[in-house]
Figure 1 (cartoon, rainbow over the protein chains, first blue to last red):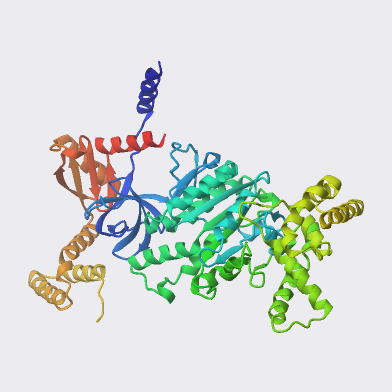
Figure 2 (cartoon, chains in turn yellow, purple):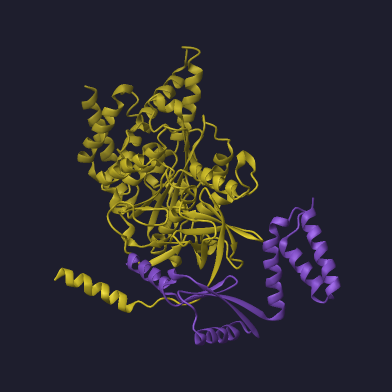
Length: 500
Length: 135
């Protein structure tokens, strides 16, 4: 029976098939090298138009010259020969989009690479699209809760914001991004993780971690691996944002992570040099700024008339020896709405996430912070900056006045509170409770090495004794006077028990 | 050294030669060869000739089409194709270059410059293959 069904279905498909007959434009391959093809003919081709090679591989026209067209080949180019016929498709490069992508791992062309079969979608989106205009936008006013205390309190991120994660290798950049994805569970957010030039083993590990945390239920992974050509690394972020736009157009909120744009810039430099475009600073082509600005401008918050969806972008940039003034980092810093700067020294001091509070900033996120968080975290950044200054100063002498000593002690505890292990996001109500205890001085006489224990106990105890405080924050985004009183009492009781 | 574009050279050669007498043409041709040699463009001569031919066809309303089939083109098909091309491109004269390629299996592929009308069986099979793989 099943056999008959297969045959019947196939027969029906073949019978219903009508081939498309149209006059097509063709050119000839003149040269092929390193994933680039030089084509003669195709005089009417548009920039970024798709072409097909006889092997079925697709290319994209990037250089339109008088005599030739420079095409990047998106796939295997070993079988493409000089003299092969190349057909223009008349279409800008597009990718399949749809709800079926959720939970899947796809390559830069949007094809499944997770071994779970083909992805059935009915819609396609062009990968290059003009960013939404000003009329369709709205200012950022809703928070993205990353679950990381240091970020949610000091460098808050809003829905529709572009926040750069920047730092040297092995400082925990991807860890922050993964924690942010893990914390989106139940927050009505779709996540898109774009991996550019990463090792397949790293990607597999990451996918397994997301699966373990139940995060693949709302996540799409787009991967252009280290073993794939520069052309695929170049288009991967655009593929990712096209997928994200599909969900935004439906009115959903999307969090997209580009890991990382340094490798993306390097891939684009490789393509540009092969296409003989003139090199500029650090051999990058002249339009490397536009490469990232047009990508990141597509992250935005739409107003209600246009669906009210948003794309929050967390691009990652890897610096060399902490040099944030290099070409690509400064470009991306100037494009984004703030940056989270991670430092190797802090990482090895055990301060993890290794966020340098002084260099990190969120330009639009504070208006997205909930009132309760604003109340407790208002002065935290300043306190920490003052602590770092005093800490350096205090090393030279032991005679310090009481106020300075107090500030130093508070600072030490603040640093301890902001430490957080990987894959352990903290929900916003708990963050507020912990920071409340810190800024109101409840932790001042708790030994620094007991802070973590105190934090944990505090949350467990107060959630039981003053549940209204947490409920208020969850529902009204701010506590009521009565629930604050109950929380204070619970805090005092807990501390008394803890200090015994 | 100034760089010359092949399109410009082809246009200049055509404009100079079109109304010239045969003795003038011989002189022009001699000068063109000298010019190409001087500017190291001899290796581009094949492409230059193609471009001049294209300009000539465009200006004089001629059309050259390459028709690829799996076996020799029947007389009726030949006439039908010429009739179709005259109508489609609005030209007076159509020249057909016939090519045999067993790989097309059946049908015909008509190519005029960069335009291709592929009515071959092999193309239909490729399209069907792509459609079946997509679904």
